[in-house]
Image 1 (cartoon, rainbow over the protein chains, first blue to last red):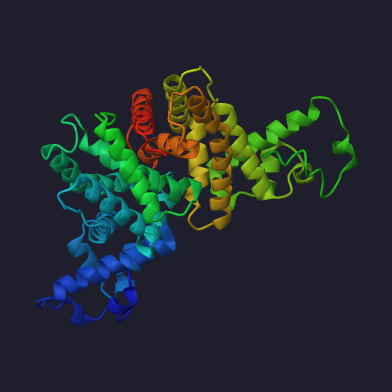
Image 2: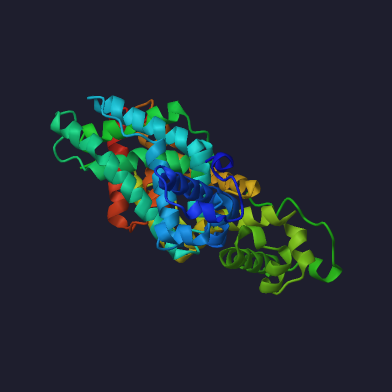
Length: 209
Length: 209
């Protein structure tokens, strides 16, 4: 999120094009951070590759060399941030795993990163179909990464065989998003634990098959 | 919720102030419909009382006579529409009631009215605190109206005594909003029924206490 550390200059300098070990990853990180900052500030519709490049202190062509277009850049920035911010637990207990997953999501949703991502994803989402697609793709990626938590629980015999992993993860995440997006209620560890309890109770009694 | 009755005027024009049976309600309906149309078209931030008045074919002072400000008008328009569109069932069976409630919400969320309301409520929500407040107030109203469904079920002995009505309603609505707002999945009667089953299963086994 902190573009301050990674964006030393606003105009392009020839030196920046020179390949060097570690340099590529540094540019990539700077561009992705600049993308998130631009998204938070200007929103999806107004975001330009020019604006991102300027903020990251790189030339526009440097961005286009790595990302085919604006949308690819945005999806990459958002998906990467979420993956880094919400780890997928594997404690051997489904109670513990779902609780940790919900707590991680709660902390992310209410922190600066989550707020910025949600602002970017939703502010223009209804009017900009590409944004809705990007959002769906990002959360699809999230779901796929979280589903093993449920599959492992079924394998261990903690949840019934017919349990639908996607349904469990969606029903775990939904109440937290609902509070942040709709009812404006605080979302904390207790909220996360309640969501985990509700979804576990439903799953254990064949309510999420 | 209806500020119309409680905030009579800020300015007054003699002719329009003339009371007439039916006329007042007609103006009110036209102004609220115009508000929803403006919201869908221009969004919350750009909506003006001027624009609403023009679209409704009334003078601006007519609007201010009934609603104290722009926000009161918007909240009234949105809350009224949702209340009209999603009836609260009372069939005597909690299965049936929750299923009907979820189906009504699903139909609304995916219909033109719900889409317009969501677009209005969310597009500017993250940047405009007043919009977030309006949204919270509207859904608070919805929750209060739906909670008796759960209380009646507890009284009939269909759900455990400790069941939290607000939690049940929120956990019923959350997966539907989540699909519309985040994963972009279709939301239909089957989705609604799955949400009702999950929440009922959790509630029956003390997962929503």
